[in-house]
Length: 242
Image 1: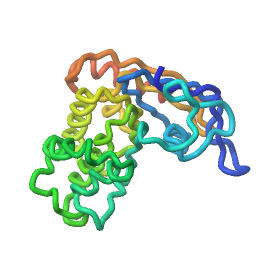
Image 2: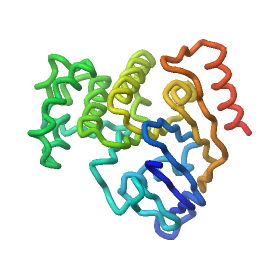
Image 3: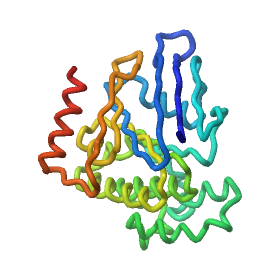
C-alpha cells in the first residue's frame, strides 16, 4: 500500500478534535475521493498526508515509512493556485525542480506540460496576466512536473466555471494516466467525485470519522449521463444523506 493511515486523530491546540480514528489507504495509481460536510477535517487530513502537520494520535505511513515532514514525493494543489506573481508561467512550473536541484534532469518535461495544459504562448506571461483557468492549469502542471508518487487536491477546481472545470478534469485524468500518480481528491462536487475517482470515502461531520466508502468501478472515459454514472451519483448522495 502506498499510503496508509491508522487511527489518526488531530486537533488544533486544545480545541475540539478535528479528526478521530481515521483509517485510510491509497494504493499505487489509485484516485481516492474524500467527501464530507464543510469543517469535517478533509483539508486537515491532506495537510497531515503531505507532512505540513503531524497527527496527535495514530500514524500515517508513505511507502512503508512514517511521514516525518514534507517531501517531493507528495505534492499538494490548493484551492488557491498560490502561484508566485513575480515568476512567469514557465518559471512557476519549474519552481519545484529548481528547489530540489533537479531542473537539469527534468526540464524537458516543462514544454510537454505546457502543451498538455493548453498554456502554449503564455510561457512568459505572469499570473496577473492570465485567466483563472490558466492559473489552475499552471498549478496543476507545477504539481505534476516532479512526478510525485502522490498528489493531494484540495478543491483546486471549485472556483472555475463548469466548462473549464470539466476540461481540467479530463486533463487531470490524462496526466494521471501517463504518470500513474496516486491521488487524493477533496471535493464537494458529487459529479466530480464520481467522474474522477476509483473510490470515494465519506466522512462524518466534525470531528471527522470515516462513515463509509463507495467504489466507482466504471471504465474511463466516463459518460456523465449514462445510467451507471447516474446510479453511482445517487448512491453517493444517499450515503451523505444517511
